[in-house]
Length: 234
Image (cartoon, rainbow, N blue to C red; front, side):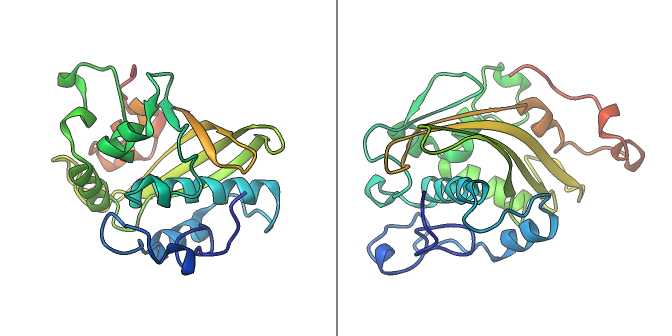
């Protein structure tokens, strides 16, 4: 597992001598102060340092940070240097080169829905436009926590349940901010090598429910998310 060295409280390989030659997408390491604050205030699990769950959560946060913010594959220390692929909801696996070219947001939101039915169309977005879209919608960031770990090292498949959330305090693709929490739950399987570098990432979650939660709704409807119509079928 990635250690705390060279990271913030929850991510490794973010600062320190090991990152002095790292090429960052925006010229410098990202600042996670706001999203860390949101995470600490609203997480539902607080794992003991050194526990399996804390190690898996650190790996998840580090993996996400490196793929989004580090430009060169050789700088991504939590990811296998050659044999990496990622898939979402059983769609076609993407190579590292494909993920880096389209960006993490677009890769994660891949869909087979016809373009006219897409609230967000990853095929029409660049890395930069996708990043801007979600940073604008979530000015405090989009926190993530591990809820349960089903299997971990020495098993080469790390399977876990996660929760991803933030507050829509900015506009999203023409939809005005509603200020409410947007969240979703999912399951992930990391296939790792002996050094716990991720070789393959498999994510499963309800994409339609997640994106439908960006749509504005009357305050009375917001009180019962289960009563709101959602888009299904990815």
